[in-house]
Image (cartoon, rainbow, N blue to C red):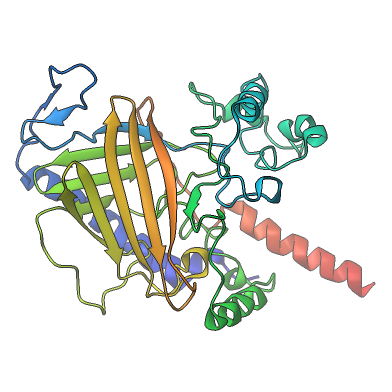
Length: 347
């Protein structure tokens, strides 16, 4: 059986992890000392740094039961009614709700109660070990995180995008660790971003802010922290590609705008190519909330860009250490199970 740890892609990532982490630390030490936060005397005003910029620092969470794409149940309905929102909130806020159950939102009324409970009783009790101090619920009345196109769904794939998606599906197999998805092999998680999506658990993000830089650290992550220059420097050469792309930030009024390009073709966020371009917007709207939106475009994959609106709600720290390496023993057992299935079919 192949040794999962021997994968060259993962080895490259791991070999640079310590050096890159050291560079992040050095950048922080050499950067100007962060100015302290001061609150505006005006009632309800957002916290600001002494340089006048909104203060984005702190711990935040994007956890929500709202799905990325609008379910058929809510076709042509961008927002829940007050009654629907209240009913769902009551259901999702009750004790022993499995935070990983994504089918609650889209399920028919008579199926919702059964979707609340954990599907696999042999697994950990998710309601016990994944429930946070602020339980996962709804963060808005929207019926999808996608706000554009107006139908709350991905734009149609281009012809090239359809062919590429079919080829990727065909390439996934149980014959070797190299044929398994990147997330299963702990090389990169699909939620890490950019753009940042709500992960299935450990959904806490820390934002640090100093003169010339904004740093984003995600709790559930295999990539390095995002060190985003805001000093006007150009992006890197097109030949330099990274799992999380290369980000450059700028301020437009009170909104931090971050544009990311230079993705690796292997990242393939939602099936995109290395031509993926992500534009994120962080707007502090209150002491407890940042409005986070992002627009994704790749003419080689979708016929039009698409945009997500995702509130970031203040959370509690600190971040907990997370580590993932080649699926640990899980990947070995996945391949072993596939071989057992092969033998069963052969008989």
